Length: 96
Image 1: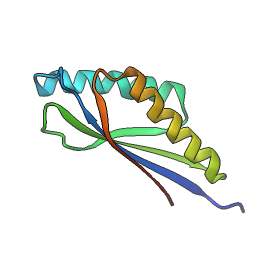
Image 2 (image 1 turned 90 degrees about the vertical axis):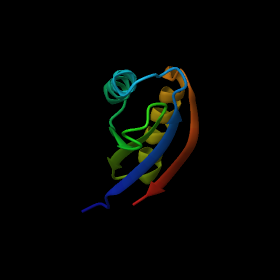
Image 3 (image 1 turned 180 degrees about the vertical axis):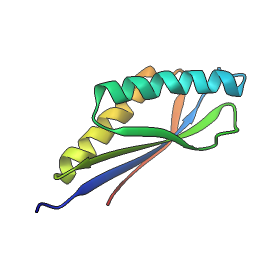
Image 4 (image 1 turned 90 degrees about the horizontal axis):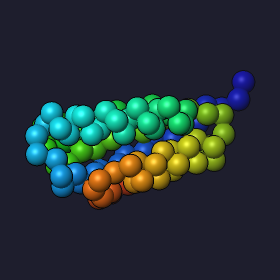
């Protein structure tokens, strides 16, 4: 049996144009759907749920190759940056 590798990315976002939680959820829903449709990753809002202009997304990729898992998370973050009408405050990746 081959080893299971998990890349776990955490991305903190600043959303300056958002003026309500409803608008924030709408923006994040679109981003999450695009990322899921394009890459073989799981993505969810994991922190700052009640803060209007900030969000933290968690991205996970499971693979038998740690390099592949890391690349998928990095590509997902690049897409988020392209789609985002705001900025990435912080980004971390952890291999499990």
